[in-house]
Length: 381
Image 1 (cartoon, rainbow, N blue to C red):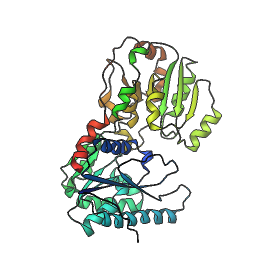
Image 2 (image 1 turned 180 degrees about the vertical axis):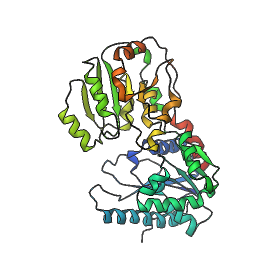
Image 3 (image 1 turned 180 degrees about the horizontal axis):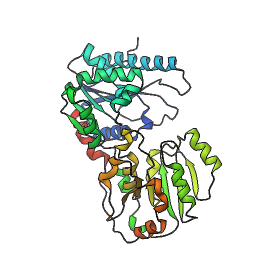
Image 4 (image 1 turned 60 degrees about the horizontal axis):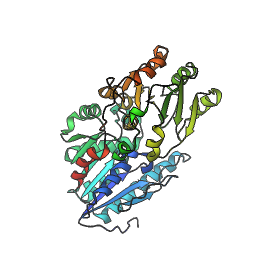
């Protein structure tokens, strides 16, 4: 009853991404790249969940959007909705008969695992992890995800591809699974598309001037980010620095903070479409990363926004806790990447940041999604 007729050609390929696609630019960029390659002999179908902002509709890739978990759902309804998604996708895979299945994160794994262990042992499985989840986090997280991850571990050695976003996360994953004989771990960074470089503003057009314009893009909170600390520092610069937040996902605590702490130099700008970012970011000088590194996933993280800021020509500052961003530190030419102690922002001199921008030469940035996705797409062929 759950099966759906899906047209497929010589090489049907399934992609499972439980979380709504629109919330994850890397999967959107991958699917756009697949369409650009125009490989007619391949047929891609994607299973995901719905969200209010239904904006992604590729021309030649079938996207099946099923009901997911809503914020207002109680625990029982959440479990039932999640199980229903997995059962529907499993039966639709039987009808689709994929030769290869790519899934994202343990939360998307169950239909692929069931299909391989029950229905077709010859199907090739690939997985990409947007995030690193430590054994302790699996143990303290959702019971269902913990069980699914144990099933993953049992057959990891048969996977065709396992990827993480950087080498440090891949090394941690290898250490966590040292008994599983895994040898095919890849690195798949979250870079923006090539079109962003074509559209970015020439850095030579940006000169040393006041105010210094800071920008933050993404989900915003005050508990696990240095939001308050940065706002306090900006306020203390008395107009020499401005700060804009572009976010459609703001925690209740953050909303309360901004309501009670207003400033002429700090603005909440609301949400923004991912593909509009190059035009918006070109008006700023420095992109800010605020994570405190409260869990290993953030400590060993080089966030998407690091590369998005750089490709758009912005300098980047990030907290010292984010060790995964250390390989990208660069001070010799613009755009620069600087680590900052956000606990001691009083030691950061705004005039120094402004003056240094006018005397540093420009460098070429080559963090391009299409160049790293080609290897994955070749594996899917």
